[in-house]
Image (cartoon, rainbow, N blue to C red):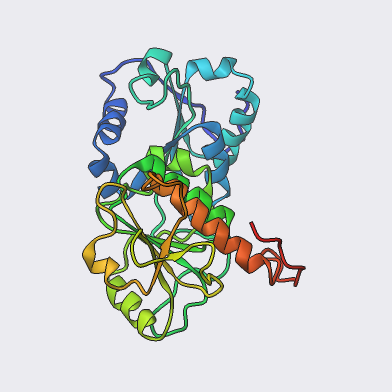
Amino acid sequence: MVYSPNSPAPVFIASRDNPRFKALQKMIAQPRLLRKSGQAVAEGLHLLQELSQWQGVRIREIWFASGLRHHREWPLCEALFVQADVDCVEVSDPLYAHLSELEQGAGPLILFDTPLDTPVDRPGASSSSSSPLTHDILLLDGVQDPGNVGTIIRTAAAVGIAEMWTTADCAWVWSGKVLRAAMGGHRHVHLPGLPTDAFERVSQWRNVGVPVRLTQLDKSTSLFEADLSQPGIWLLGSEGKGVSEQWAALANQPLRIPMQVGVESLNVASAVAVCLYEQWRQRSMYSDLGTGTVVAPVAPI
């Protein structure tokens, strides 16, 4: 491996009794410890590339299996290791298997500090109730499946949603499974958790006419007939429990996703994608959302 003068050679660990290895293994096995430490673990070349570009994200360590040296991605991994200029730890393949969540994983595995304020490569993130809401906010209430949370982040990034709030009982947005499902979406969506005054903010916005959107079967308007042109709050619950009564009581624009008779619901990530792309379609009738340029109306679906 070729290193810059400021980059030390990787440490090699071959024993499960190594204190450094045991400490990392314990953190990975107990997500609460990892979260309390203010750190997170991501795995894979794509996420290393993404993390290397995120402003405000500090990579602490990079771990990899010896077998990674024989992969075709090795030259790129090597270059990224040098660019990161952090401690690199090489472990035997059998030892790496005790760290990885993936079958036949070889790395790289990245230990990094979770940012106090999620970096966002898009203007418009973060609002207070004292100012007009200029962008949409997704509010996830009790969505515990990390695959769903990650997929929603990925969809939000794709359609230009700048901010997403998550209640305490949602899957942690920085868990490995969420990171993999989001595929870099974290870099484009502000993820502050749930602001302490979230309920007050949503209530005040609602009182001044901001749409608070919720999908439900009864007493609702078809998604494809509703006006989604105005920025608003999307309330999104788990498939089992839905949105809690506290949040649901704030909804002033109940919506229904049309489905075949006998089908009651969609997976929450699928439902979010349908709603957000319909919103995107409606708004693109008036402007190019990427540039602000006025364009010709889009034909109805």
